[in-house]
Image (tube, rainbow, N blue to C red; front, side, top):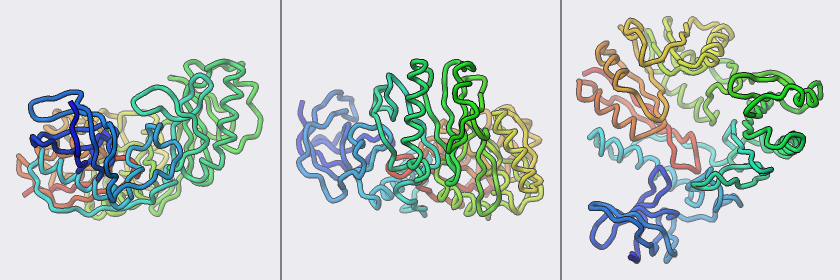
Length: 411
């Protein structure tokens, strides 16, 4: 069945367009552009919604722009680069507001939102290497789009891109498919290149040892790493301190927005802090600037080691523990402000229960997923917390991903 003249009024986090059919059913359309009017073919119809694919565009609408990246129509890295930036911001605000309204029953007309530079903001990219091709995955595929640079990547990454690409080709020519993934991370001055393999071949690696490169160079498999040149970490200097980040440790990809997020959020913390999912300790140290008693909790051992070093570098009194947040002893949650920055799946039922049992006066929730944020907020609102503050941060321009900070206080 063909649906005609469907106006796309929203974009979901997965990039699908949202419209309404003549029967008032919601229509989810693959490859749709926000604001356009299109014809589409129904591929699945349910009681309350329809899934469809676009056949052709009737009118592009005023939000459309020609994508400034030559790879956009194939690459899976960006989903909304064909929408002008002001509309991107509106869509992300609406994504947060609609999730809170639908799931948490929180009614908001608008929210504060921190904008980012549109391009060249990423301090880290991950390239896939397969069948002598180097680039990103195509949309909904494990085929690779070969690229010669990335419009989202920091200028320093792009300046070394050609050299890094040739190095990967050279290594894989010596041993076919030895390298399957390349992580490039920068602090704007230096680069660390992490080449991933299934099994380290030290004899092969010797061919590249003791040569000078314009970047720190590490080859890593699932359990070990081999430093070919330079260090296994980078040093990041922020407004509130200096931090090391080693190999696979997590660090926010957008320096400007991360700085804004931590500085804006630190004003809520003036007493003892427990920071769950603390990573390498940046959030614990930066959020707890006014606190004399800070605890950071993280499950990954390499991140905890970084965190302990960062505490010493910054003369911080923060203490870090390698603990699964779900298994944390509730004594670490008592009479403290609690900050959480979970992965996309949000908080577990066990952890929510533990936090509610200790009933902190303030809970700071940093989220990269509006739907799981809204789900978890609902549980806290039901036991007597109220929303005191919320702000969106555009950590990932050209995608529908968005960061959000919420402050909950006890009534």
